[in-house]
Image (cartoon, rainbow, N blue to C red; front, side, top):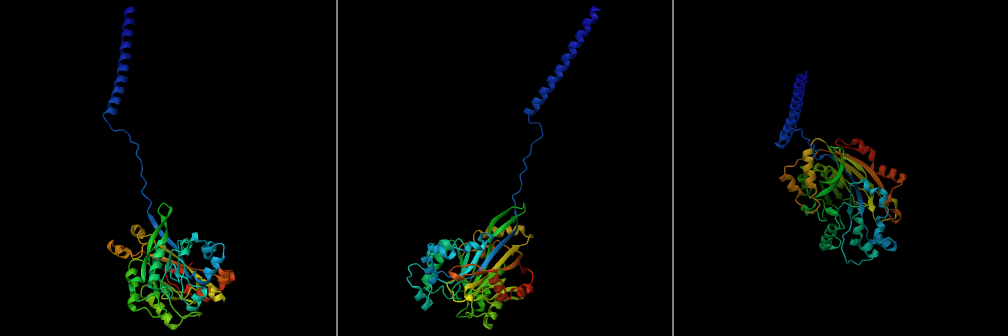
Length: 404
């Protein structure tokens, strides 16, 4: 019996030894497999693609005549606000809701000019001090210089005007002489709001052609009008003519014919000024024409018509079907803020094609009576819309144009 028990103990020892050996061998195999790089489950890092632009929107406000010389300067210097005075109530227009403000600057910006208000008034020789530009630059994106006053300090004054605007980052377009055809249109880096495919938003710039036509003393030639077609193949074109008889409620036949020719020549819309009064609007071939927006920031105060204006709110939006092309346009837009840049030639060189756009329009009434520009009252807004014949015009617009 003792021998049987010894044999059983012997086999138990061997069984335990074998089990221990198997466990050790398995552990060694696992260790060696890890050391030799045997395939193991990996923790992969998922990299999300960069959000891409889906659509862009530019909420623009086009404003009538702007001028801070003569009596505006007198009122400013008498105020504690000094150079801030003309712009001190512009915050009431909620500037941060807009991507861009564009106006017509009716004066050169020349330093060292010493003229009294009476002298400016009697000779109608204007000048605006560049000392107002640090404040103006907080509000205005671009000015048209195509009018009958930007040459009032000669060619040197006109050239300095451009230099001063460059200095403060305000873009500009147009020339006082409509025979200088190369200066009529300029590609503006229009600020836009970008909506991306992950539902985020960002700010950017989109190339838009703004074209200024000074037609007070002579009608621009068909060659001048044809300049717009070069840009219209690639980008939106907005025409800003300066023309017509002053202090009239309706445009004359010469003005109507010329403004319509701008639509025929490729403008997406026509937004005019010069008469200092608001004039009517029309839908011509489905496009918006505003014959005169009136005074935005000016020193004329003697009657309601010269103290009010119609700011034209233009909301431009791209479609969502050319996102790759949109990315290329936005990349180009960042380079278009310099006067006489090569944005148009770059668009051609890169093979860019025109984006589909929709446009919606609204009216922001303004009033600069009591020596300071501010939003119109409800009653003034109603009278502005009536003068514009706004509802009828909106009813006759065609796609892609409509009312806000």
